[in-house]
Image (cartoon, rainbow, N blue to C red; front, side, top):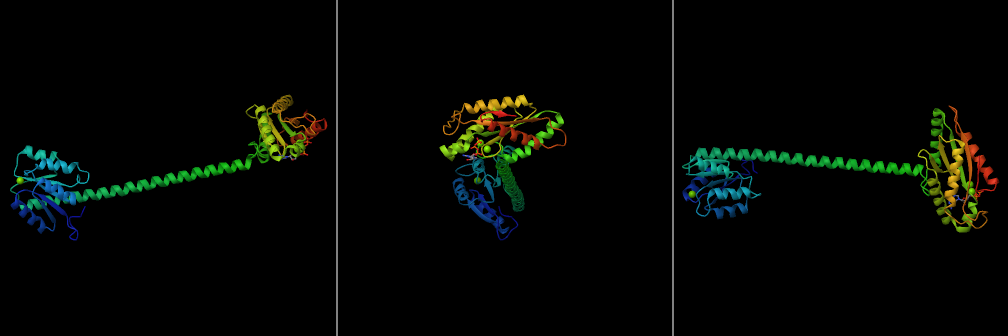
Length: 340
Ligand code: GH3
Ligand code: MG
Ligand code: MG
Ligand code: MG
């Protein structure tokens, strides 16, 4: 939409009237004001002209030879390309109902014939000014809309970045604390978790039990069946241990190569022994053959069990040493057994 004040870019006005004298006079009046004027003598030509270029304003006579002004007005208003063009009706009809109908069909103003040039000029100017202000508002609205979209996009991108960071962080945490082969907690996790549970049991005056278990003759298993088979075996044993340890607070870790450790909070010695037996049974049911060198012909574990009631301000080192010693005893007692 042109600014009607801009002489370098004058507004384009279409006059639709079948009466040559009217066209001539109106053209002269408006051209003198600096407007670019186009003319059409009937509805069909008017529509063709509008099709070529959408004008900034239309002066529309009601009585036309082919189509009446009301109908033409409705057609222009129902076209998305032209609905915003202001239409001023100009007619000899001066009954209130004619004027009301013009506005109803979408006209923005009504000029009665015979017209006064000053009146035509001021009414045209007013409508162009309104249209100009309106299009400025539309532009501002569009800018705001685009800014809003941009902001929304930025917020979404930021959220996505945050989510990606969170996931990366989570993966790092996992890498740091989870054993990749067995998906159990690793040695680092155990080293963090044991003192925490120890202090908790000291506060609650509860027993804390620890089981360290070690696969029997696992070196010969690897030597016999190969390292990949050894890995698979470790994985299956890890899952079996996990299945056998049922209480929600119990924690299973891969302690070292073929060693696992289980923290059992609020568990006295007899409870820990029961857990070791459960694990033994669960591993036995895997029926993992180990026919060379192994006494039992299948994969077995030896268990070292320790149990203490933690005193305040002490460390769990003794609990680990005790379980380690017990594991050594179980090995010397012939394996596939537990010692305390
Ligand atoms: P013992 O009954 O006295 O425990 O005998 P062992 O052969 O199990 O004990 P040793 O400490 O001599 O050997 C442990 C073996 O466990 C050595 C290594 O081949 C194997 N091992 C440790 N970590 C892994 C692993 O991640 N994958 C596989 N496949 N084998 C492992
Ligand atoms: Mg006419
Ligand atoms: Mg070992
Ligand atoms: Mg071993």
